[in-house]
Image 1 (tube, helix red, strand yellow):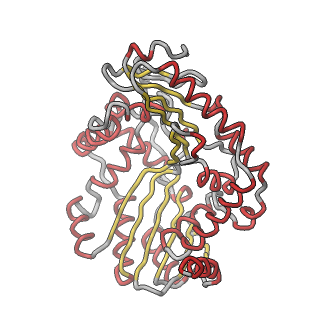
Image 2: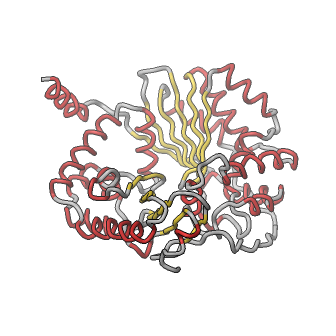
Image 3: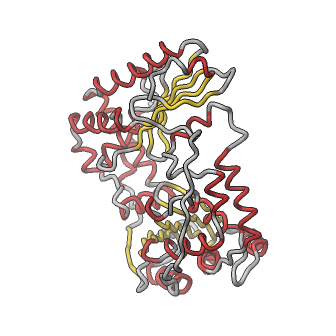
Length: 411
């Protein structure tokens, strides 16, 4: 009886009125999405600043990470860093920044009466930061610690090595080469209103939202980057370089064996196919003992094995992935994933953060449409699986005792 009531409740959720997405663009090119909801006296703000891979000069990998830290810890033209923290605490304003595949992101939560102060503080932090060598030195060390992650288990370094090729992955050398001039040039290049999207949700009407954004971000203008030359750094020959089909090696004397393959999401994979695959692939029993997880639009397959079993472990790892890719899913799997997605969508529609995420995904071309989920065929689903698990796109690596790694295929 309880299960039946839950099923009826989930079925009725889509019938509830959801905030309508209203869009407007400021004269400076800043796009704004507004979701009006007066249920609680709160206002939520999400600001996404898009950064493309080509924005980072060669030899300055990690500029995005270091810029984010500088924007969060340096003084501004009006405030010292500790003053900003004090104002946020006194006002009960939550401000969180993050680096994600789309770019730099800031999330604000404030009482509706503090909305002007909250967005004003974010604008001050984003647009009027003072870059100094002393703060750069401190934040460079903090960023290097995040990149190197010295506290992680030895095998965890393998996943870090697979996240990207040496030409784009931050290193201590690339972070150490970044100067204040590099940051200023990068800031001028990427911190532009025509690259940003703002999502507002909560206790404010459309006209009030327009006034709020125009007052605090309306003067934001694109700056011409200063003339600046960057000297490229040589790639460290000891850095593991993932090679399609063969594992790069990370010798860890005395350690157990770990084999991993990272599969970036294909750029032409439809959002609907990607969403259902993300529900089906992780935890599929046919992959065992290989584990598959999904994070940041990347699938990561992992196999842990005992020392001395490298040859058999490698064969098992390759066989599981190939068999899983070739067999694909059944119609029952597709129906199950579709029901799970629809139920999850109904629940997400009740959460403001999920509503904002959905609105942002739509404007970025990553939105998932219910009609297209219902129309997705089994052939399309399995074609997406084969594309995502294409061996030519894998970045593969192995970590363990050097003697164990010798028996693995040569790159």
